[in-house]
Length: 107
Image 1 (cartoon, rainbow, N blue to C red):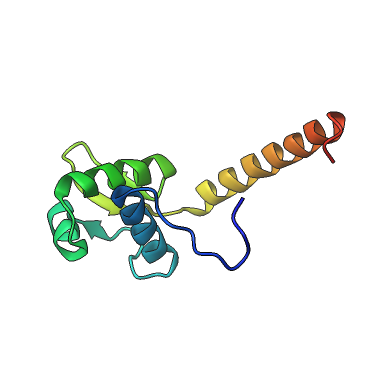
Image 2 (image 1 turned 180 degrees about the vertical axis):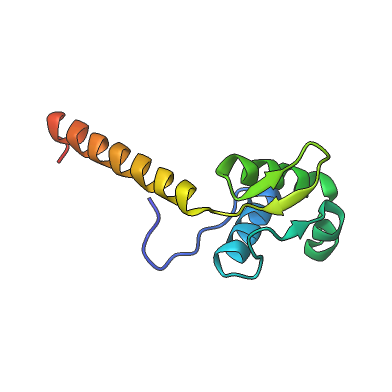
């Protein structure tokens, strides 16, 4: 477990790119629906396109980036319905996890 106040260091360059793009989305530097280009991201970040491609796959799995059939990339737009689905699912999972922990005597 990480100590409070300690920096979290990425395990790989791909992880660093994932964290950079994720932070840019969270901070509003990349807007929902904004198009992204692998080549320009790689040039801006000083990495290879392969590294960016791996990071994009990870971000797509997290739901932060949408990929079309023609390999175009964009920041995912979170609709009110999708937000409701996410929060509903999270509420169900968290209450289930708390109940399991209580039954197992961990809390």
